[in-house]
Length: 162
Image 1 (cartoon, rainbow, N blue to C red):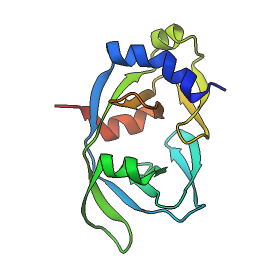
Image 2 (cartoon, helix red, strand yellow):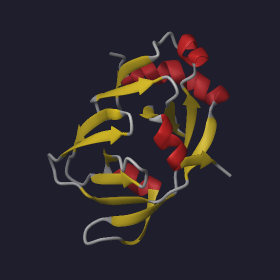
Image 3 (cartoon, rainbow, N blue to C red):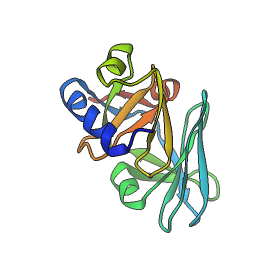
């Protein structure tokens, strides 16, 4: 399995040179996570990863057909989302405010990275994450981490930044 720092070292120059800046085009729902709570992120094509919450973390749920959920630390959450209004009892709706730089995992990019059509790497939170040809690898604009965004959910969630 490819370590996070190794994947980031491989992909950073390509993100800087060829990446496109995107922003989320849909709001998200979020709530405070319970410490120790485990969330499995499931996209239309199956299990992507899982993560366990620490004190102060948030559970984020995207407004996609799959409704994939994931854990996000409070500091990253505050940088990336602004509250809108309460949606149902304990989930709040938030507007995205951050941007990412992303690249599609094309056959050419996978060959340049010397990676197979499907591979696993260590996600920024330390758990395995799967990536497949056609998916996107995304990073914050400071290139501090890299993560997978499944193809279908990418197009439901992101648009080129304006």
